[in-house]
Image 1 (cartoon, one colour):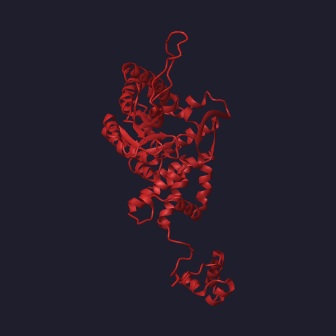
Image 2 (cartoon, rainbow, N blue to C red; image 1 turned 30 degrees about the horizontal axis):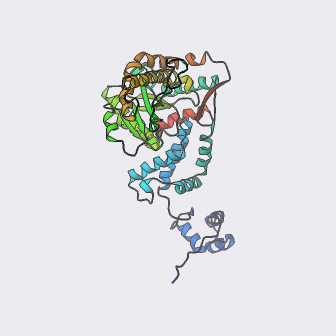
Image 3 (tube, rainbow, N blue to C red; image 1 turned 120 degrees about the horizontal axis):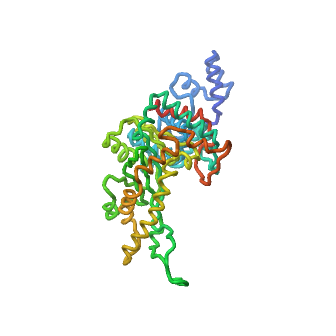
Length: 428
């Protein structure tokens, strides 16, 4: 016997809404159903509250309506605070929620896919519009006036919430950012007989890649353990054994920092380090507004544990991020020298592999990343001591160019930044 197919509902939702309104105004159910051409039984059930008034086709969503509203509020508020939320970050956050709620679901590894994402956007069209704006990639541009307004609003937020004293304590102001170190950095010039074309560096084809390192420091010159991200499902034992104690180990398909790896860094490395070093909480952590960094669980954890996440102004990290301005250039130059010397010392097998990476980088950090470099970086960025004119005074009015592309919000409305900062304080 062939299966009985259900009848597809054919009436527009607007007709049912009009029929409900007519009944609420005193019209009989039968008459309203006939007038607006909707099923009388269905209209009766909706009037009596037996079925929901909003019609949904297909299976029920995995998350309840109130749970999805939390996600929507979070997406909008993060965008206002300078942290645009992309598709992967949203799906990672939903995966965490499903696991925490122990919610039965059909997803692989509890992570929803494209169909759920598209359905979510249809249920919340305002999010679809905001997401499209957030993920616009454009050539970096910022004005002196934008920077002045950013400094002003961040200071107002800190003062209003009683956090202004944090800026007076260099040990409580942090910056964190990721950078890539090539296993085979381009070598410098070498001495060889004139005309000798045989001078070369031996490089394993498998090692022509880079590793991502998340480096964090405060304005006092202290450096929490970094996190190194590998492109592995399982870290080989010899590599795991080579990583210094207390360092973070991240894994991602791309080899870059993701929302999940950043969450692991904050919860397993950074926060325990703060407690172990008796850093007074709350602290400020200035970070770039990477879409890949900040998921819902990270936002909650930081709000609950005295970590005030503050987005640096979009496309201006080359001016106001200590890691960009002072630290990474020093480390990259030192890394080339370190690798070159390592090859000389290991001339019988001069191929730098991943197993050699962390010990060599550890030596570099200890030798090159001195407290004074971090202190000068925070000072030049106008963060500690808090001095916006350190950055803005040398700039001319109007547009400031940068040759770096960033993922950022198209709107640079400072009122939105203020609202987003307040959200981080209040939502959780």
